[in-house]
Amino acid sequence: MGSASSMLTQYDIEEVQEHCNHLFTQQEIVSLYKRFCQLDRNAKGFISADEFLSVPEFAMNPLSQRLLKMVDGLNFKDFVAFLSAFSAKATVPQKIEIIFKVYDSDCNGKVTFNDLNEVLHDLTGSFMSEKQRKEVLSQLLHEAGYTKESSLLLHDFIKIMEHSGLKMEVEIPED
Image (cartoon, rainbow, N blue to C red; front, side, top):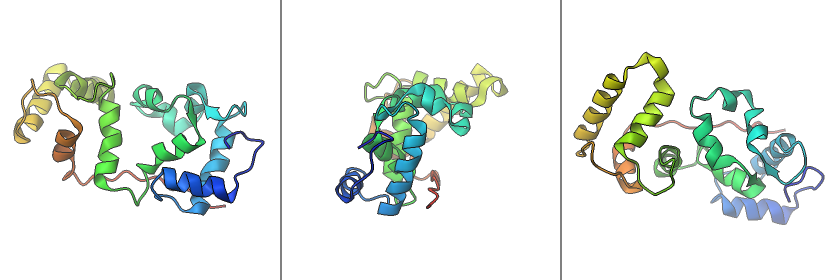
């Protein structure tokens, strides 16, 4: 499974469905496999950072370098598992968990004020000054009951984000 020359069997599809907690239908998994094979230009069975960057929407994303750390070298099963956070069926905590991983760039299981500030800088660039970013983040943390010195664990991050009206969904065209 995973190279462009191979085909998905019913067993493969069911295995991938299980791996992504049934957040995608079998038809969606087949469509994702076709897209995976298009991205996996060398038919290696995984997608490299350069192959991900060939997707214009991905390359233009201000967080693309952070996301690349998460997606570089994904095989098909892990590709679908990664995308499952963007499924309409994914729960808000599942969606927040992927955001947490974007913020936790050193993968230590904690998001610090500096991590938050770096992401906000990536998102706003020169549109916000460093002082404005720090003020906004300090206020956000204060309102949620945390301080600049707090290290947020996943459950803290979920507590802060779960009432934000988060909408992260990807449409999967069915062939």
